[in-house]
Image 1 (cartoon, one colour):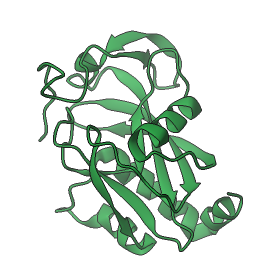
Image 2 (cartoon, one colour; image 1 turned 90 degrees about the vertical axis):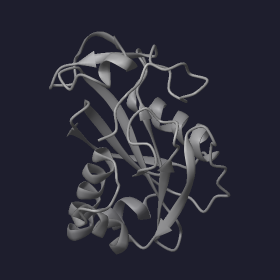
Image 3 (cartoon, helix red, strand yellow; image 1 turned 135 degrees about the horizontal axis):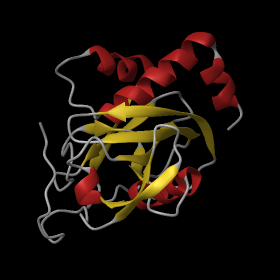
Length: 192
């Protein structure tokens, strides 16, 4: 299991001293905490975002996390994802992550929030979708590029025990699957 580190930022891309809002299970801010603390205590709930980018032909862009990430290095994750910094909100963070990690600014639609638990952390994550064909400029400090998958192939990763995907991506893909099954995903994508 990936473990967090407080090693110097020069070696690892994530700053263990970044501040996150600490929230309760109802997503109310109850304090602040350091990234380094949040990533080694699943009792410290904090916020994140997952943005799933669809291309015009319906493929899904998944990002491969950089080897320098403090949790889940090298795993597949959402097209763009990240933590909500103390005082920021979900939508503001979604925009920041799209720009920082992919170099794009497409329209986004909020879908839902979900609780994501792993051995190392607990987050309330907000899921957004976007439609964009790029060009994408992957951040070398955040990503090791990305892959485009047909929606069915992306959704199949949820049930593959060998797939190295982040817990947050698994939760995001579960919500995408629910919406696809009821036709709500297509309606949302048509609105973009």
